[in-house]
Amino acid sequence: MGPAKVASGFACGPQTPADLLQSAIAEAREKLSGQRITGALFLFSPTLVAISPAMLQQQMRALSCLQIATGTFPGIFTEKNQALGENACAVLLLCAPLGLIPQAPQKNHAALAWGRLEHLQGDWLKQAPRFGSLSSRSGRFWYQASPRDNLELGFSGVSTESLWSAGLRTLSAPLPVHLQEGSLLLQLERYMALPLLAQNIPVSIRKDSRLPLEQLLVGEIRADALADAPPEWLHIRATDLNRSGLWLERPLADHARAFLSLRDPAIAERDTRIVLDQSASSHPPLFAWISSSIGRDAGFFGQDDRDLSIWREQYPDIPMLGAYGMGELFPRHQRAHFLRYSKVYTLFSGTAVEST
Image 1 (cartoon, rainbow, N blue to C red):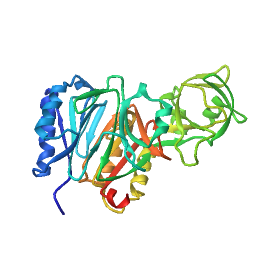
Image 2: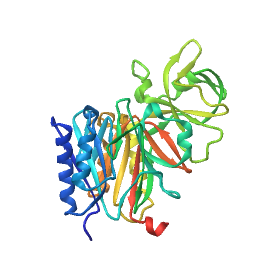
Image 3: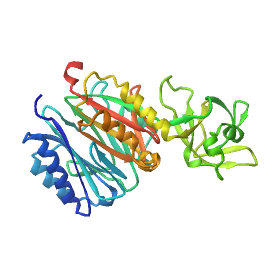
Image 4: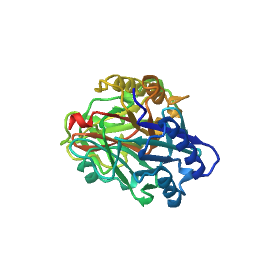
């Protein structure tokens, strides 16, 4: 086995962004045994959003590397460490023949995309396959120390495979949307929306004093959706007792079908085990990027992030970088799909030369 081509580093504490970045880079470089750095990803927690271009330029000179991308997210993690709500920096360094490409990749290879949730546009999702994470309003992004509203990067020397863990328990079958008034969903097929929800609430939460709307979602399957495309997820904002309806964040599409789902930690853990066990790659990946919903952190599972624990059990030595964000992008059918409350595992393998 040759020297490592990818390495991660992590630093957390009350230091300045420059000091944290320096510590994380030092940890990663030690694993690379002096090899030349060809690309680097730097992630910061939002408390460190005031990152100066001068600091990034200094690191470009120190690493002798121009292909450096930087972003801030609500939380960040590597294969060994994670942080949410505290000062932290995580890095991933690439060595030749691997590298970053500052534009969409060729053929069927998906690109890594970072952006802010408010910039998400449907047409942009349809243009190309992308995986990645969406940040909050405070998120900022740089490439080669230049500020960007969003970033899109390809990777040279590797191919990618993205796996989706939905973590949602289906409560009803997909039914045609029969009646809605604006964002008020009144009827699916012949069933009134609120009674349908009440009838399908699991016993475990039925005894609660209030309906846990923060755990419930409506899945939307559009009429033009391909068979295995992920549904779009809508929050239930409120219930309407007088009209037996559900207030959604937006109206459902014309001729769509819809179903009810519950965010369930046990289902999330099961989904993650299934998708990682079914990975199509016959060899361990070289490295990975993981996009996680901020709603799939340790608090969701009750003690620790079981998704990351399962990943670390299966791939304990694979370099990995990831972010807790406000939404996840999943590539399928030559487009990106916007997901919620999920984890998307993108595995990089060194088969790009053979597959192209």
